[in-house]
Image (cartoon, rainbow, N blue to C red; front, side, top):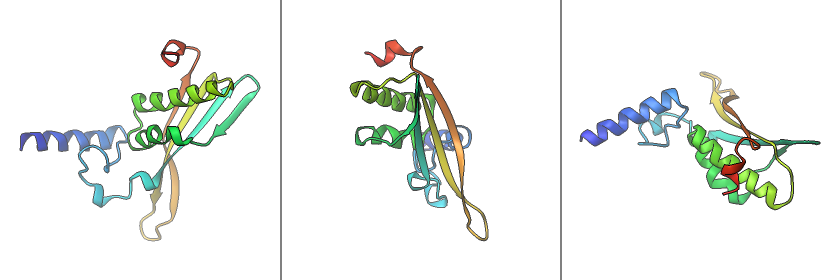
Length: 135
């Protein structure tokens, strides 16, 4: 019983302060909201000399992207950025900066008009983190 109470408090706290989806964590409140993976999406951009473009999420990156959508913490976003850098390097494409945007679709009361709102915009500088990405 105590564990359930602790999990619920932590989950509600993270949902309110760290953009954790109510569908993640303990799942408390998940049926009272549309804030799940169906209404969140990730956009990934890479920058380097003579290169600035948005990338599609590759199949090998889908799990990391889904985790970043549900809980856009530094840790989850860095993991996704690392997979992006590793894939780009495998194909011989330069990357200096990875920018990850996590968006949530919200619906207005009454008319249910859908609007997208950024939850988190994260930049990861590859040059500073070279030791991490090459391990």
